Each structure stands twice: as structure tokens, then as C-alpha cells.
Amino acid sequence: MDNQTQETPINYCLYARKSSESDERQAMSIGSQIKEMKDLAKRDKLNIIDVYQESHSAKISNTRPIFGKLLTDIVQGKFNGILAWAPDRLSRNAGDLGMLVDMMDQGKLLKIKTYSQTFSNNPNEKFLLMILCSQAKLENDQKGENVKRGIRAKCEQGWRPGMAPLGYFNRAHAGTKDIIIDPKQGPLVKEAFEKVAFQNWSGRKLKEWFDKVGFANRSGKLATLSQIYLMLKKPFYYGRFEYPEGSGNWYQGAHEPLITKKLFDKVQEKLVVPKKSKWGSRNVLFRDVFKCASCGATITGEEKFRKRKQGNPRRHVYYQCAKARNKKCKEVMLSEKQLIGALTRYVNFMSLHHPQKIKLTHKVKTGMETYRKIREQVLLLKDINPGSEEISFTEYAKYVLRDGSNEEKREIVKVFGKYLYIHDKEVCSAPIS
Image (cartoon, rainbow, N blue to C red; front, side):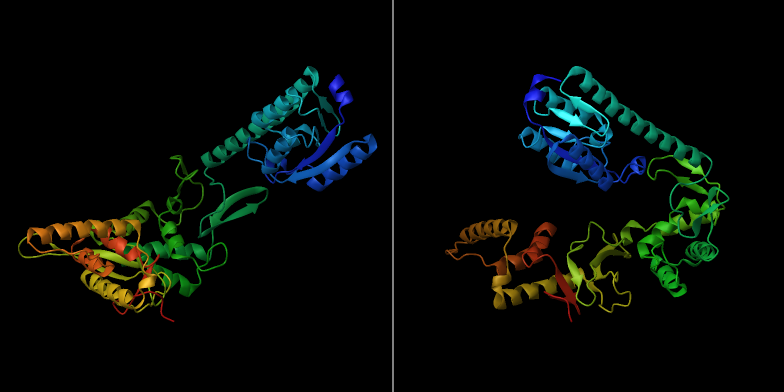
């Protein structure tokens, strides 16, 4: 033991940690660690200043907030000793271990005491601490590799890890685990694929049918539209799966397929939406700008192209409620021309009756100044005195909605807040009651 340790009183922080991850499920509980170490401190007359505890994995450095606070407090001189049940409670990675040893080298951390060992600032004890913590890291890494190897072997045998998709369930039987068809949901899933492939059912129509027959997800609630679309895109149902998803590693499943590959491919063809009729196209001016005043769903836009006897097809844009919250919402469709007219009327109304609610953005202010200068130059060229009148927001907004760019038009909407609403082909500031 060095002279510094003998002369300087040790002020300990008791640090207890347990992770919920599989590699530490058998470790002593935090409460037990604290009790045992307090009993040890009482027996050996150790001075505990404070107790820090956290539930967090120590596999990766600089990820434990309480451990980070402990290191900061040691640097600031609040503690110069650590009590912990075992070395692996302090570190299972090289980064945190290095910081502990570095603090010992600097003389800020004088002692680390575990239930069965003591580590002071001398070469042999620091070396032993590094070996024990490195051994914990090695065990950690080996367990991780063994888990990955086991998962890969399971996939190669045809069994997909994790929860089985809707229409199947996981079964443990006679010491083995497999995936079998759910006798209630399996036939419904198969029928859903057939309805899409041969009857041209849409996702919404399929959801109505699923709701009627009580098709539920794993939480016991009715399956959502997004869950139904994800189900229709899962190759698992014809016998193949990718694990992990997005990895490009494909396996032939050992489970019984619900559908054929031919039926699956036919459904994928039906799910492809032509670009010209896709809702929310990037060419739609007021995409995700307005809300439905009746149900609160987003107002979506659709491009339509009408053929003409001569020349290119004529483009039209229409807006309507997406009906994501109420599939029976009765808000009517309106054209982009009608929407711009409604927005112009709304600008007039707000400018006259509620000007204080108009919050000009930086882009709108810049646009108004540019418009003023252009207007002034045009009037001067016509020998007309432009005067010194400021440009009103109403005048500028009418100009933009008539002749401005798409970006400028969208910016006009932003001065009224995050969202405006549409009801009966008119723009309003709030949903209807």
C-alpha cells in the first residue's frame, strides 16, 4: 500500500448497477448489492459519502449517466474511493476501464474496493483490475457472438426469430419451438390476399372487412390500415423471410406457407400505384398544408390528366379529405383553382377583421419588399408617381396567389399558423364543432 493511500482518508461512493439485458439477468439485484456493501463498510469501518445506483448496461462506454456523474464527482474531489460488488459492476468495456485507471494514475481515485478484492494505485493491483474487467468484456463479446451464431443457425434451419406475423403463432411443444398457422386468423389472411389479387379490393375495403370479422393485432385491437398493408407485403406468407429485415439475408422458411409465390406476386402488382394518380404527389401545390374541418384528417391532393383530341393531356389537381380518421367523412372535393379562390377570400377576411393574427414570416416580408420595388419600377416606366405607400399584405397575397411561385403561395398560408382547415370548399381557421 502506498504512502498516499495510508495518509489520505478515503471517502467512498457506493456504486450499484444491474442491467436488464440477458447477459446480466442472473446478477445480484441492486438492493442486495447495496445491503452487502454497506455491511462490509460497517465491518471494515469505511466512510461512505453517497450511494449511486442505476439500471444500465456497461457494454458500451460513455452511455451510463450515473456512472458519468460518479467520474465527474471524483475529478472534482467529492470522492476518492469506489465501493462496488464486483469489478464488472464498474466496467464491461475498455473505454470506462481506461478512465478509471487514468484517474488512479492521476491520484484522484485512490481505491476501488469490491466484496472480495481491493485495488489501489499500484501496478500489480491496477493490472489485476484491468484483467478482471477485460475478462468481463471478453465474456460479453463471446455471448454476443454466440447469440448471433445461434440466431443464424435457427434461420438456416428455416425458423424466423421473434414474434410470428399475423395469421401464425409461435408454439412451444415438447421442448421445441416452431411457428404454426393460426386456425382463426390464418384463413382470413389467405382470403385477404385473394380478395386483393382477384377482386381488386383496396386496403380500405379490406380493413372494413377485417373490422367486421374482428381481425385483431397482437395487442388485441383491430388491425390498422398500415398493419394490413405491411401484411400484404410480407414474403413470409409464401414461405421465405429476410432476417434481420433490410439485411439482404434471405432464408427458406420451415413453416407451412399460407399462399403461393404466384398469388403473392399478383398482390404486389395490385399494390403498385401509378405515379400520375398517386396521392400526395410532390407536384401538388398544397400538399399536407390543410386539414379537414369535419374530422381533422389531412387534406391530400391528387393530379389527374385528361386526354384531349389534340395536344398533350390537360393537368388538373383536386383536393379532398384523406378520411384517415373517419372513412365516412362527407367533406367534398375541390379543385386547386377553387382552393386558391377560397384562400384569397380568407386573406381578405383576416386582413379586415383579424389583422393581429397575421404573423408575417421573414420570407413573406422579403417578398413584399421585392414586390414593392418591382411595382415602383413599373410605375416609373409609365411616368406614374408610385408615391410612398407601403405594400399591404392583402395586395401582395393576391399577387402571389395569382402569379407567384408554388413556394411563395405555400408561404402565404404559413402566416396564419401551422394549419388551416377546409369546410364546404371554404378555408377556415379552426375545425367545426
